Every structure is written in structure tokens, then in C-alpha cells.
Image (cartoon, rainbow, N blue to C red; front, side):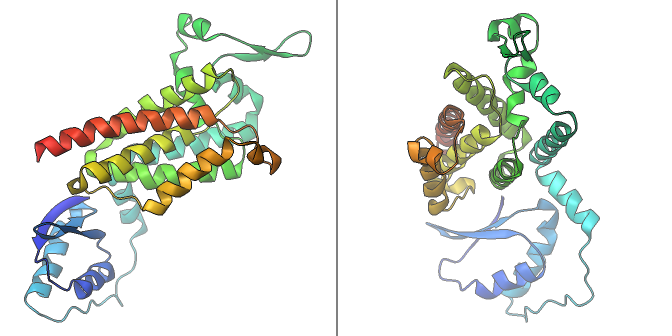
Length: 284
């Protein structure tokens, strides 16, 4: 989100909101000490937003003629790519890896697991070591398990939260910040899970929990930053993480959850969120 202007604290913005949504202009209005702050999702729509706001301020009719407007699918996809290129690319890579797993099976898992996996002559699972991985230069394995997903529900759940939080981070703070979170949380979550004694695991959920912690702290400690996350969503995701740590989760069929990766990712996200929200507060 991008700051646009401050509106009067007592202004009734309901008609303005309706006109902006009718014009397909993504926005938010937040309550601040000095008034109501108007935010814009796509900077390419800045002129269109100012035109609508100008008519609202002059008291002109706010009806928008949409009968001749057809959604421009190519333009919409391009706008999404421009707003969140790294999040879109990460989501696409997860889908490609999932498709490759369907085609090539265990070969993909063996290639992307945190350590090399194989079958010994005795028919048991052969597991390499992290020191061998680093010594052989296979450093991609520190991050690559995040792109492995073991089922449609696993994939959809993780992609949903990656899109929700990642797009917000990129829109407000850019792709470089999103890349920092992705690398730090992905590697941190994978190492936490490996340290717990597990070699075969995967999923973007560690990054998702890092993004949750980051966005939540930014919204709480630096409210002027534009970040927002519903409190009930925070409660739900943290409650889900705690639930999967219990024996009850295994009883109802949610076994083999990478709990240490969730916790490791959350810790990384909270640490980054604390640091950057502190910097944002000092810069105000």
C-alpha cells in the first residue's frame, strides 16, 4: 500500500469507498491521530484515484459507468506481477515442483531434500549429512525443501498464506525485503526441522509463519507502515500451530507436521519484524 492523502477525521467516506471499488481501485482508509489516511494498492492508479477523490470533495455525483468496461485480464495479470513479482514467482515455482513430483516422484524429493536421500542395498532409507551437503557445494538444499509439498491440501494451504502475506510485504516494502524474509525464514525453518532429527520434510509453511510474525509486528509497532492483519487470523494460525504440536493432531490424521519448521520460521519473522518496525518508528 502507498500513502496518498489525509482526509478529515469526521468525513463520511462511505460514498468515496463505493466509488473507488466501483472503479476497481484497490485502497484502504485507516484511522490516524490527524485524520483518515487514504492508501492506494497500485501506484499506476494514482491519477484515477485522485480524479475520484476530487469529485467526492467537490460534492459531484459519484456514480461510475461500468457498463462498457470489461476486465482486462492481461492488464490485471501484469499489474499483479508488477506489485508482487517475487511472491508470484515463488508461488509459480512451488506449483512447478509439485507438478515435477507428480511426474518424477521420489527423484525430485531426493534432489531437493535438505540432505541427499537414497535406498541402501539392504532396502532401508539412506540419509546423507548436512556437513557433506555443504562440503559438496549443494547449498540450495538449505532452502529447497520449502518448495516441496506432499499433497493438494498442503500446497493450497501454504500458497494461500504466501500470497496473502507476501503480496502485502512486496507492495509496501519491495521485493528485496520479501527476498530477505524468504531466504532467512526458509533456511531457518529448514535447519530447525533438521536439528529436530528429521531429514524428509518440506513445505512453505515456515516462511508463511515468518510472514505472519513480520506483518503482525509491523502492524502493531509501526501502524503508519500500512501493514494489516486481522487479529482473528493471527489467533487462528497460532492456534493451528499449537494444535499440530499436540497428540490430538496425530489422532485426527494430522501427523508428520513440521512443527519445528513452523516455530523456527515464526521466530525468524518476529525477529525481522521487531527490527524493521523499530526502524520504521524511529524514521517517523
